[in-house]
Length: 201
Image (cartoon, rainbow, N blue to C red; front, side, top):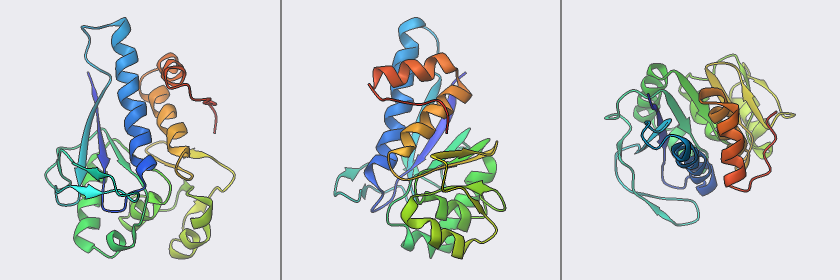
């Protein structure tokens, strides 16, 4: 059975934070189907924006979601990228919807300063976490209950995961492929992407 991956996008999202994980999971599907073309893909991706409308990434690229965050069915994995997040941090309705989706998911993960959104939504409380190196001090000030790990490229606490900045989302996503599918698929996915992945944090 495919695992449902719900990937958030929003205005001024960091493009690689979003596109990197998307590429990892879709490449994993493609690699898996080489061995078992009749089997369901291991991951089913669904993209959402706060209101279901198209957004513009930080670099200006227009992105079209599959739907709105509030209308999306519960995901196995909710993935929250970073970018310019201050407007979303101040949006109580968005944070409530994010909280609901995160509580319904089996796993929740952030890329880069998407950790601020998880923390503001109450989904990252009192756990180990990381974020982009530039944002560690601000995250510590805003959420002193977190045990921040600046030494880690990604952190897996079981149900909640986080990664350091931007390209570290590739590493976290490959780790998730390994954990949720298999180590073999993760390594073959990294090889297909020609990405020098280390399967440790």
